[in-house]
Length: 175
Image (cartoon, rainbow, N blue to C red; front, side, top):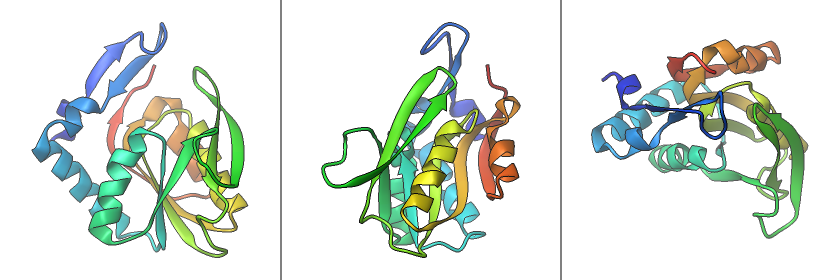
């Protein structure tokens, strides 16, 4: 199945000059969503990991289904002030602003290997921040799986240069 045809492209969202790749059209089709989860599950076999983490919010859609299917614990990496207990925090740059993500301090034990799943990688800032959270938690990043890679924004390349393994299901140019 060509998953690429299930991604809607929306120009000038969230601001002028950005071509937003919308996954809602993929997840509303049960066959396309099932195929996406199956492909992530298959690609996850190349990694050795104890837990799955996802970046708020669209990453939760994919990672929670994969977590359930693989019977692995699921860790939420959330926006600032969304977690009620003690957290680690990392600030980072987005292609269109700044943000902070956090993880509960008790989510990851020392030495645990964490696979990070998200819907999309652009410049890699959010993914790099997620890796920093895992490391602050004394865990290690097993690798990354993204549904969409905006290849000309070079986020996947950035993560690979930092020594991380990266898998992508769909490649699009980014704007």
